[in-house]
Amino acid sequence: MIEYRNLRIAILGGGSVGAQVVSLLLEHGDELAARAGAGLELVGVAVRDVNARRDVDIPRHLITTDAESLILGADIVVELIGGIEPARSWILLALNSGADVVTANKAVMANHGPELFEAAEQVGAQLYYEAAVGGAIPIIRPLRDSLAGDRVKRILGIVNGTTNYILDRMDVHGDELQDALAEATRLGYAEADPTADIEGFDAAQKAAILASLAFHTAVPLDAVHREGITGVTREQVQAARRAGYVVKLLAICERFTDSTTGIEGVCARVHPALVPLDHPLAAVHGANNAVFVEAEAAGDLMFYGAGAGGVETASAVLGDLVSAARRHVAGGPGVAESNQSNLPVLPMASVMTRYQFTLSVVDEPGVLATIATLFADQGVSVEAVSQSVGSARSGSAPPNLTATLVIVTHQATESALASTVTALAASPVVSHIVSTLRVEGL
Ligand code: HSE
Image 1 (cartoon, rainbow, N blue to C red):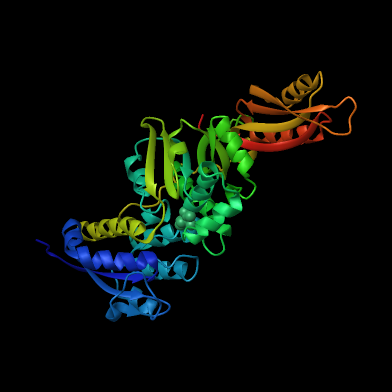
Image 2: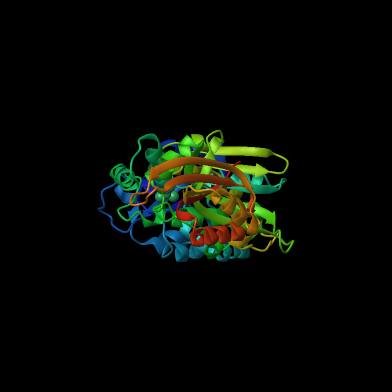
């Protein structure tokens, strides 16, 4: 028996997620109300274009273009329009008027999180954003609540479905990157302009959100090191599989002590990486997402599922909506942003990682020794070397053979590994550097 008054729910945005949230809320409203302990009354859906075609119909009487009036009459505002503005202003308007806010907006959370949390705290409102990272996958609440008693050491995330789909096709079907991207576009995973996905901007926003939450430290988006997948070739992906790896675009958030300064801090980075085939992340196929969390006490955890999609993301949004409604019923200020660790954000150069170098070298006596010395000079320790002999170079008498060397290093700082790349590029025994890829998850 629900005794609390009906809570007025306003939804901003009637796109694929918004329309699904409306549909599920209307269909399962009584069940959700019973879980929340309060009636959930959908008072309106603010859209830009009343007549836009939608996958799921929204009842006409709920639709309005007057978002601001809708916000000011709501107890809980669900923001599903995406992008920075007007989303940021409307979230602030809602929070300042005392409404709780549920958002799926990674861009606004990654760019303006501290400002929004501050506004929420001022009035004792709550900001929920489970759907901003990993779509349907519960990861925000596990990091915020379930792991609040632990210390997260590292997160390795596949948080962009489009790039995972592309890299997976290159691996499983042997596609070139452009062909896999065309297929991702045809299937609706990639936008008409895929830059945000393939250049790693989308994953970087999610990395900033995860790192801030996991390490109780504000990690600004511009501190996230970002590399996309456009430089990854089919040959690299196929060579990776032969060597026992798969190439994934990873969002990596780490807490570590800088080996030079002794300062403990955090770092967030997004780049393609080789992941060993026996790592759980190697089994994440298609457009799925997964977040692998290494915690001091809990050990390794993995959260896996659909990282996008209207109805899947609506699940996370509705979970937040029920949580927000429960808080209204229970009263109290809710959970504030947790940034009390306030650790410094360390530069990418301090990160410890491993590289796999693939080098084309002259196959002559002493070449391996020269290269080994070059690595030693940079303070980089070699873990494994394999060599295959290539074709004879034409025009030489007697012909000089080239060899392909694949060298995997032990852990070293990013700066030492970057210096090694520079030294290899300048070395007369290296014909060219075929590829360098970081190795993660060992
Ligand atoms: N464009 C994102 C992806 C989905 O491909 O995973 C929304 O975050």
